[in-house]
Image (cartoon, rainbow, N blue to C red):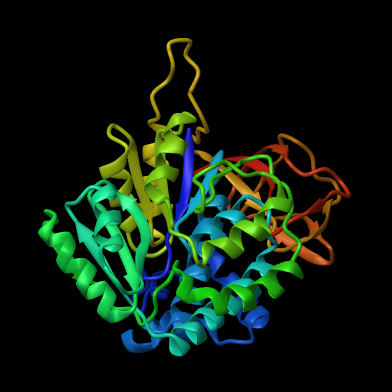
Amino acid sequence: MIVFTFPGQGSQKPGMGEPWADHPSWELVAEASEASDRDVAELLLHADADTLKQTRNAQLSTFVLSMVTLDAVSRVGAEAAGYAGHSLGEYSALTAAGSLDFGDAVRLVTERGDAMQAAAEERPGAMSAILGLDDDQVDIACARVAGDVWVANYNAPGQVVIAGTAEAVAEGAEIAKELGAKRAMALPVGGAFHTPLMASARERLAKAIDQTEIRDCDDTVVANVDASVQTEGAVWPGLLNAQLCSPVRWKHSLHTLAELGFTTFVELGPGTVLTGMAKRTIKGSRTLSVSSPNDIDSLLEALAGTPATEAGQVEGEHLFAIERLVVSPLAGVFTRAEGSSDDMFITQGDLVGHVGSTEVRSPFAGQIKGFLALEGERVTSSQPLAWLQVTD
């Protein structure tokens, strides 16, 4: 089975939006700019490294580009049965699963970035990656420090991040090396994320979360806080609030997914950090990443080559390279184009239907094999509307 994973803060880099600027999915950037009252295109195309390192900019730009990437792979029919995101990426996962509306998610991520940056300025902190030491030993290193330092991320075997005040983190890193860590690497951040030093951000974000609808979903979504599957919308406000001051149990989340039968981990968004973590954590898994439009063909080829079971059926989600989906550009009520029918042939740009008053035109030429949305159904942004087999 296939799971889509989404990166968090730290994966951003200058110019990361340039490969996507001419792609149809870039339209989400304008929607995000309106929802956040920020120039997201400027962040994705022109912001320098120092600007992007600011928490409020790093989180918004990474989230939006992850959603552009998701929209792009959805347009060609690639789907997953599971979703997970690292820290900020949890908002991407919930949006991908349909629990969060895109506009609502943009507003939450904007508030989260602002709140965490303010908390870091109020109580400055530091983070350091401890490499080559077991989780328990890293916990012991933190416990031996008199100051404020905690484990912030359980990323992968032999890769744990600690956070707290600068002095306590430095001391914890030295103790970790005494206990056998191969290396302690300071991270270029100004805050102690996922620790009690983020308490003020948690209080601020809670108000925004409480005003946001988080829907139930049918697909698997694994939470950072406890590495458990959570599909009920009612539990997510508490989990998202707790996440700010609790460690990200990413290694445990990957194990949860593997135990559920997920074998293909596809990272969507800037960078390949999560791809490396999955390789280290789940031996024998297949790991793929999409960070630019050029990666989509490789993804389709890899998914089309998914081995079949003994019964001849493909296990998990499967996509043939000649299949495509037409997806909704926004939320609204779907109506089919007059005269449309199953098995009809269309050319690129032909009208498929309307969502509200917005026309939905096919970016592909081919034969419609079926409509996936019912006449008069209320659909969400990026929801598949029609399935077609492309022609040359």
